[in-house]
Length: 536
Image (cartoon, rainbow, N blue to C red; front, side, top):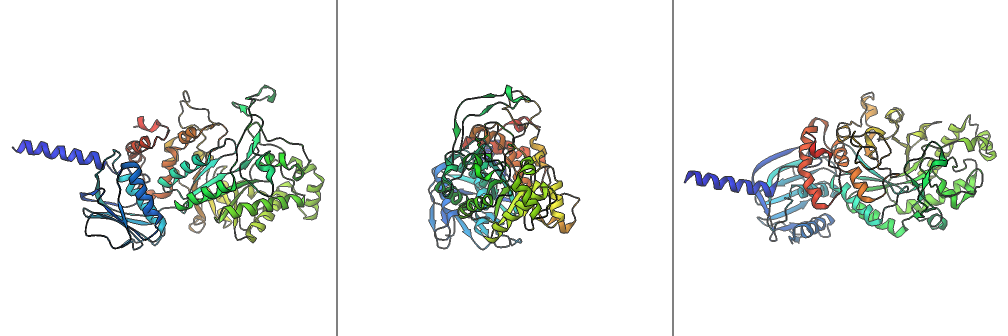
């Protein structure tokens, strides 16, 4: 009899474990206290939240879509049992931070408390990851208490839609992944030499001429351009302002700020193809069909160039309400400026010693305009050349030196060094069977073990490091499934870098959780890279 009871208990234990799973949470919460028992979520569960709560509707729709469970939403006090409560009273949550949350799962009910809707949303994302993967009309959730808050303010991911274009629905799906991993900033690369992707009503040719290239380089550029091969197919695409508004609203509901990037003064050939009068030579130009950087850039000595940029930024700032506008500033060839009469005259008038100072003049002038509209600029670390604009924030991509220099000047910094934050790099040394990548090697453990705060900074200087982000450049990423492959699971690793306190991190533990979490990715049909599954 005792043996039969023991077998029955083991069976019940395995059944509960199969439904509740283990704590395969990504990113790892900073405090988990496990308790005895489980909560049963079913059609009879009441979801208690304030009227019109997006967070409540998000959870309700998730349960309906993925499990066929229909919970009742009620704005009144929770019943004595079988409830999920979303409240702005976070109880004994010690950290006063709108992104922090307290998740309490008991046998009778679940309470998510937070100081802000952001925290409620992140608590819901954690709860969702605790749900069993298998579809069931009664979900067993292990009892526990999680007190959680992020390590960094800027938790970012980037997507280049210029080299290859991704549809509105694909961009939304990308935003869904960011939301799942508590990433709060989407850096959207919208203009470059190879394509202009955002509608500007004052300059309609940007949506017709600048958004198209007549063909695309096949493979990588050769040493002799005469040997390069092209596909002979017109390629393009752009987002209407209505598309942009829809995507911005979609991200905002998920507490993600979109930072648009409008490249200047370099990476501007696509714009010049439609409006050559803002160049140094007057053109004619064509949108770039190869990869790399065009020598033709915005003329820094022509006042009409600044008028064009200001008009573009006016419409951009109307569409994107966030604090920062990314103005690029990287990889700007300056040979045209050296011989351009207008640029040379500008340097003389402004007493500028060289073309690096001319770039600083350009960036500072644009910054003053953006500041006058109540916004701030952020740019790649080349904007340090010739002197940093007074209020600019810096994205450090050429290693960490630029970020260190900016922080020492009391400028805010987002760390995104090519190694390990460029997710267009290879993720395994064995490249056989791997899709073509731009080069480099950024494996999962390198991403996970990255620390955004340089030890060389003083405690006072370290406060200027806002966080970090992962970048997905798309020269060789031609489809959204390939975006997924290059982003996930490195995005998962970065999310833990930016959310979880360093003392709570452990790569071996992360890899084990990731293997369990991959079942969630499989259910979502994410085309992720699976190298980690065989990693010990």
